Amino acid sequence: MSKSALRDRPEISRTVVEEKSRSDFEGFSAVESSVSLYKEKSSIDERNFPSRSVRVISGRSLSSEEIASIKLAALCPLPLNLAWHENRTSFFSCRKDGRSVHLRLHRLFAKAPTPVLEAVVGYAVKGDRNAGTIVRQMAHLYFSKQCIAPDDLESKGRFYDLLAIRERIQKWYFPDLDVYHNRPTTCGIAIGWSTHRRVGAFKCMTFGSYDRHRNQIRINPLLDDAAVPLYFLEFIVYHEILHARLPARIDARGRVHSHTREFRLREKQFLEFAAAKEWEKKSLQFFKAKTKRIRHGRP
Image 1: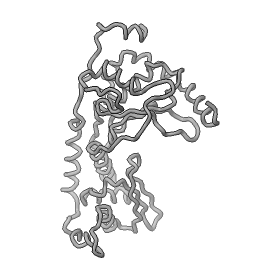
Image 2: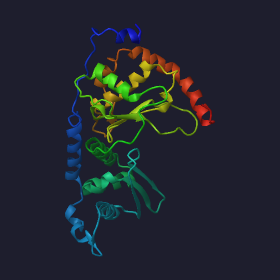
Image 3: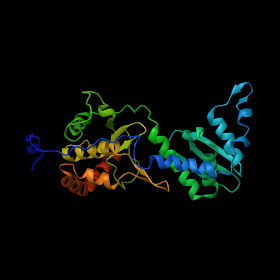
């Protein structure tokens, strides 16, 4: 049955996807408990750190980053070169050159309790798996709770209007959610065309992504093409809204599971799921060729 035929049949029954609270998801309490348990087992006593005495130096109060830096340097058995950043993709990265440790940390760790900072050092210096689990759990806990303003992205493309598509998907599958017309944050979820540009050879294709930290959906601008079926783009938007409605689960090892069994079952409730997946399989050569043309400056 064609898409237009489905739209013209108001009597068709569409499965409603129930909304699930962002803060109430499986594994969330386990993350907090795991961090608390690590604090209890830690060999570090907060009182051993001169926090009170180092909070004021040269007549000024130290920032949380400076205090965390002092603690990390005291915990690390090697000289530590530390840099703070806001890149949530690589919230932790390190390298050792034999004589020192070079560590880059997201600012989320600036206010972490000392036992978690101990885990950061243990993971960086020794590659301790248990410590690595705590690092990942702490990051997941932070990004699940903290929300910042979404990026300013265009929602109207050359061929497709993402705002209109999102409102249509909301009407069909999420009718219990409020709609604020002509605004980019319907249901509190911002949406827009990604500004990220691929560099280098084509290896894989990311059609869309959901950023819980910003509560924002980004869609690959390569999909703004007349050759891309509307139902496929609608499926991608539906898929990303599901990520917003069904938060990821984190296991005891700190691994994040976004596509849970419940997610896969809900995903198949999209009316043209089979057609969308079939077109996806056949589309890679098309996007590979398009990426090559763009890399060489051709439309």
